[in-house]
Figure 1 (cartoon, rainbow, N blue to C red):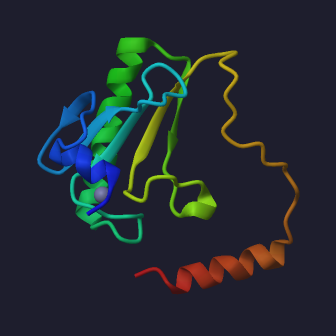
Figure 2 (figure 1 turned 90 degrees about the horizontal axis):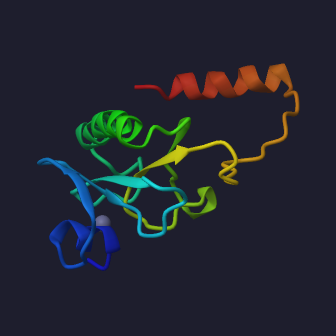
Length: 137
Ligand SMILES: [Zn+2]
């Protein structure tokens, strides 16, 4: 499969690994937004959250929790962002599910999103809630 993250899992493409278990691999982003920018992925290919097995997703999130603690101890960031993007429209660049840990410091110049707060229509919000609730299994 022509997937850069699958090639990292197989070792075909080298990476700077920080954590690995049976299900998960974590490595440094080679285009880091900040020092300690990590990517956490399932070893089994899955493009997005809609494709990944729940157990693999939970393993990725569990490793993310463990790694966030390690980043905090190692680099002492003032905060950190977790980012998990699904689909090109959402900004996903590599179609193999991944979580970013981006350590944050004051004045680092990064912006995650600059959403303007605009009050929504409460009836529409309730209607959308109903549609989502109806699809929860
Ligand atoms: Zn892949």
